[in-house]
Image (tube, rainbow over all chains, first blue to last red; front, side, top):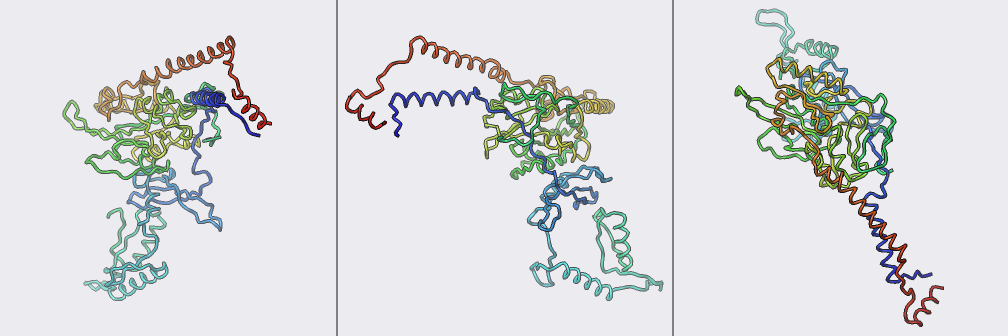
Length: 197
Length: 305
């Protein structure tokens, strides 16, 4: 069936539609005014304690990651804030620490070992195993070549003066003790951390 | 429901609606307040970074114009800025006054008053004034209604944005992101009562240190605010990057919402009513529905069948 609409009826319909939509727009047919708060973005996140990498103060960080470490998921950090239980910072952070998420996500951040061979101007990606073996090899060779067992007065010493070690100032006491034992037992004297850099 | 996420029932005010808000859940709800102690601020901007990080905002990188202000002003994607002011006091000493500028969360919010979009601006029982961007129509009335010049309209989606006082964090039992990050304790958060107590103690301390005009900024013109300042020179708030001395909601907003709107409604109602009476007394204007040409009219009737 065809709906017959005369010119007059067409104008009437148009006017009625216009009037009712205008009334609705002017608030005579209000839609329910609901209020909403943004979803809390940390519900269910995995929290990992860590220490800020930037300076020697070593503020405590809480890293919030998506995923519960189940087998089919690669967890991903999506929020970082201060650790209220950390004795140094008690939850506060500086602008660099508060923005550390973008540092973690930065495209220019070094995420794997690289080596630049002597004489080369290119950085080459190597595995962690290769990197650690290489460092150990260099340390051993250097220590064998330069180890000092006697000082100028003839005293027996354990000195390795040609290599230095830079450790982290933000370590726990246990980490610091272990680092100290490893470095000093090798005879290394140049030993420092970024708190003095 | 569009834009609905959490069914919060402790809303005490909503924009542009005569529907009553759910009112009963206010028992035991303490009003919250953020205290910004300008005298302890070092201008490190940790709060700005924490704000952007929490709210998933990454504003465009700007240009350095030779001052510490960065960015130079609030934007739809920067909800708080530090305003750096050099002030020479009566003794000729240079003072560097650094004020964290963000939404003041007024007790009587001008933005909410001015907003014509139902439910786009709400105020919760804890005092937070929040924008529900889903309902925002981008008209910019909130910008005109705000005595502190806080809301900004985004060019990307034509919606207004401002500091939420981290309503999502506060409703989940946390302090706002800026408060948590502050390394000098310049930004504090708690109940209104506790913050006023703390502010009074800080004011006394500053007075003892020679700042005779130290005081609390909690302007009565907007019913008090849920973000209060401790100022070294409370008698001259304008030196802190143009903090208004006696902020009030613009009379234009009152005129628009208080007088014009009911008048307009009355005018429309009157027009509709006179239309109805005209119809009742005179009846509709009679016009022949069929084509005057008898042949064509019968053809049309055949078609209808």
